[in-house]
Length: 68
Image (cartoon, rainbow, N blue to C red):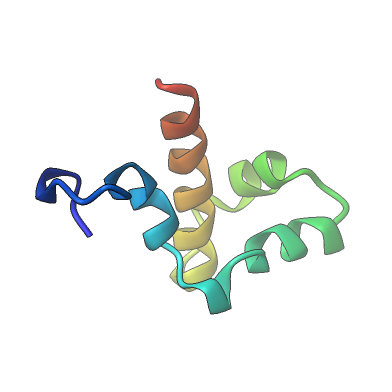
């Protein structure tokens, strides 16, 4: 789905970025570590592989949500 396609739900593009089967997994990892999502994301942003990618996505998603 693209914002440019004129679809009525185009503003929901961020929800399409994460499949429903993967939603909440990074949050669960953060809770298991005893940290907030953002604190855990900052700590793991330079980690290799999928964990690092999830952390960087969480940090970028936060920026998008606040309009930065």
